[in-house]
View 1 (cartoon, one colour):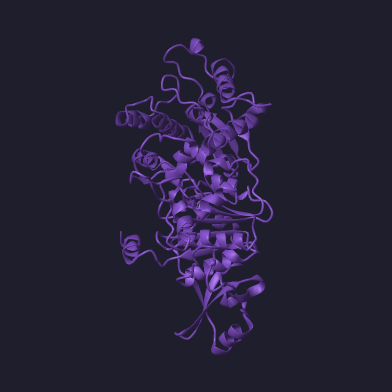
View 2 (tube, helix red, strand yellow):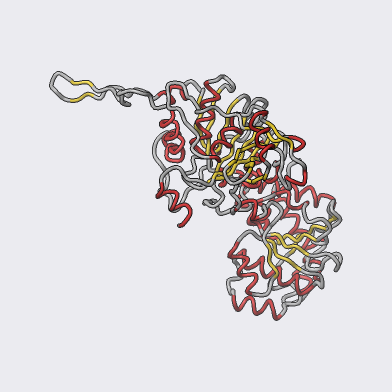
Length: 512
């Protein structure tokens, strides 16, 4: 049985007005009621009270089960905000509907939703009501808050006021959890303990470190590795190095060789061709150590997920697309799919005219540029055939399709926006997802779970370039996927640090 958010709110209103809550008629104007009837009193004064903002629920609908034995408080104003998003045909809309269903399930056996329902972790979950006319004990702290922020109808201010009331009625700590930076600043300005939602945040060192790990070996070990192609290293010499991680073996200052870690501490030599050869196109040679490691991971049939960090100009997208074309023409996959999320940088131009393909063209143009570079035909032929009419006027004639456009018409190459991936099952394809740092963790999970047997997923992006307001460098889908799946035998990660686009682009990426 599916319950709508309106049903939850209607039930809440009925209970608080007549059943378990306050009656305006009975109490009369200015009368105060029991704090427990508004959800202000915690079932126990031992565990912490965590007040969840709307953006936390939208970011991770499963967060209701991640606070162990603490008390979770959801202001009723959050339900109103969730209503704004529940009809969206987006990941955010889907998350809002998940939260509504979860709350309905949790409160289905409770008569009063403000008294607290036990959770699996040993804590409780309850709704909290903020009514400035009826809520008891309008503390001096709350009065000061309304002098600083006089707009009482603003949802953010109502959530903050609700948190202050909870602080006044509970001895246990009260913490506001929100991903809104401005909300955090407002909370701290009035003395509220405020935290970001940290469950899916990655350690900052894992995001900022782009250097290849180095392992020192002696000359005989280096010689044995060069001849046999593998070398076993003791555990104390490879701390925190996981399976399929790329390292650099060093024997002195001048002798170095890259390697990939496999099971039980065995290092193996990279297996890469001299160049990625593309049929009737341009061969691509790796320009640096990072690109060599990336190509090794992309061509390894035992690795089905590759994540790659790299600043602008490091060649992450171009190398990934080239490897996909290389593998496709070698018949290892039935086709190549390249996608990217639709997230704009800066001001938008409004609605775009034309068909769906024409609307999506600006978002997908970087992928078209990469395909055009790699599959540009060799020779003097241009993209359009020119003829001359009898009167001397130029006749461009019909456009001659590019090789990759012909393959797109045949369905061998797909270039599409990520918003259409939900519900798909993708078998036997090489799937490249560009700008993956724009994804939320839930969106990344949706993409990963679309991959069927025989497919390879490549997530590339720059955690330092994020335009999505709902994620940051430590909580986006790219770093989240890498952090949760690292060390698995079919997962590899590569970081690119050296720019190859131009000296100007490399200097701009590092210094600006």
